[in-house]
Length: 44
Image (tube, rainbow, N blue to C red; front, side):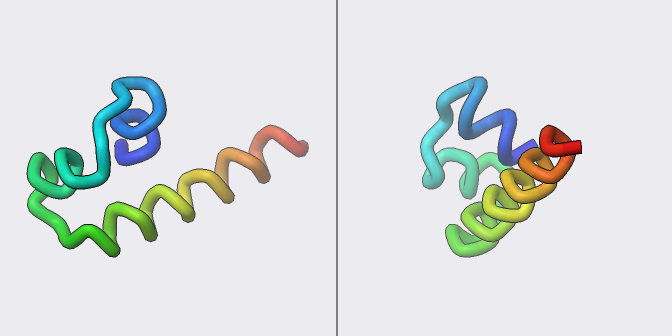
């Protein structure tokens, strides 16, 4: 969800944090994990 919000909907970190009611660091962490999962999926 964070990946979609950040890249496809172009919503900034602060707004994602507000919508999901999670800390800024959690948004960044989830985005990082989602990027790694996507990278691994595309490499196969």
